[in-house]
Image 1 (cartoon, rainbow, N blue to C red):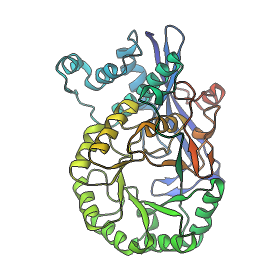
Image 2 (cartoon, rainbow, N blue to C red; image 1 turned 90 degrees about the vertical axis):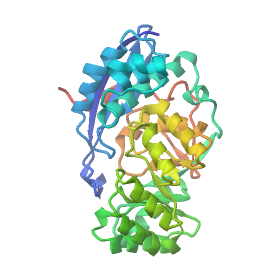
Image 3 (cartoon, rainbow, N blue to C red; image 1 turned 30 degrees about the vertical axis):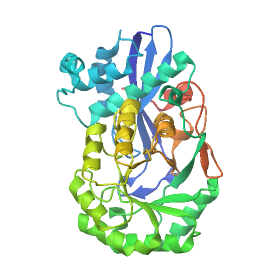
Length: 389
């Protein structure tokens, strides 16, 4: 089980013009991700996913270099099963021996950003290997799934007022979803337009359809408060990232001013950021992205904080198949997990990177019981879209 190699590959998949959408991130012209591949001396291979940016697109050359030229040197020759210790080795760098010996962290510098994303992809791959070596799904190794399937919500919603109902209803019809998420915030131009779109959606969809709103952190505190007040009669499921992630006190102020649930976390790194959110009472729902927050290992720590503070857990699953699968495994063992994000934007990294597909049936998605993360990477897809250096 000794690690033979650790390699990272930037996958860049162009999105056909007719399938592109535009948000405050700009036009989605491609889907980009870093695929992490770890092979043991015995021939076992595990895969993970890391992101250079929280959205669909990104320049991943630096992230690839960090994994290929730095972190891989710390891992080759190590036992792939020592996942928790290897996490600390990567996080603490040259002071890892102090951290492991004394039971607390001593990070050299990279407490956020690319380093944690790189660790995330590696950590996923290590869990994939462990599951495959034992012939068990990762959720079994984490304590066992609590449910066979979970309700899913259709994630998208970029259309202007005149088209938002049609767009969201088309999402609902594709999987008999009972919940949808739409984008609000800076991409709408004005706060009034965001409110208008939400009110149109609420009026046009069936009353039993839950509507979530995602501002991508683009409201000011005052705007977020006003938004919550003006859509108070729309029965919003949650307002996601109302303000920039760096303004946790501002987010707490928004939450205190309204009974609209606040969700956040896709832009956060490690349990320490989520601890701060919980202590500030800044949100109701944690949404870590497993390809950013620190992987499966760190997501389990984050969920423990959610449980201790009586918060809910709904991982950010806007990514490729490895991010999605990892999130499903953690969600299924989480005492606070309750719903699955399902991207309805053009996402070849979710539907084409692996042989298996994730299918929503009657608004629910089943947790896979195949070994490891439960997915088989399509090597032809990887070769076709790998960015050649």
